[in-house]
Image 1: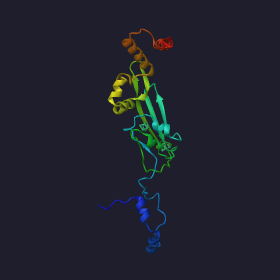
Image 2: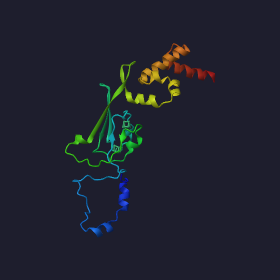
Image 3: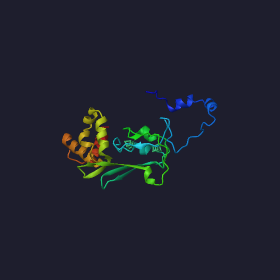
Image 4: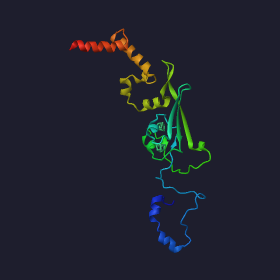
Length: 206
Ligand code: SF4
Ligand code: SF4
């Protein structure tokens, strides 16, 4: 099998003067687009979203300077939608750097001329997590929750009782905290009164 030589190495080895000595007809340009252009593997083309790996976290959206990536929430149908528009992309690769799962994949594709704008758009839809306590969709996707469960150490999960809290809205989490306090402390008051009492207590102790 022939040894694989990188494009950059080939360029370094190519001696234009020597090549011209042997053939005055050596082409100086490539008949593109009639032949496929070889790109160096390190060439930074437009990225591509791998829908299997994407968890819908939105890190790429926050990092994208020209808003080539946007995130939308459809709470009515429980969907979070990530859209990539190659027409706006400046190929800076910030999205690839920040993506926690490697879903934002680099490519060497540079040709984006088209007569149909739809060709330049990629859309990935995710199911939003649903809070059973409140009957509302969360801002997070189901995959985000699975991902956090997979990477967080078990001790942290247990310490903050995340198993029973991670799929809840902020309001339901607060309710759970108050219920827990009532159970453990035996204080039959609301969370706000509890805060007030603690402050009063501290003031009185001075
Ligand atoms: S390469 Fe840069 S401009 Fe293109 S989508 Fe990623 S962050 Fe945005
Ligand atoms: S950063 Fe990666 S995982 Fe998160 S939304 Fe973007 S592509 Fe998906």
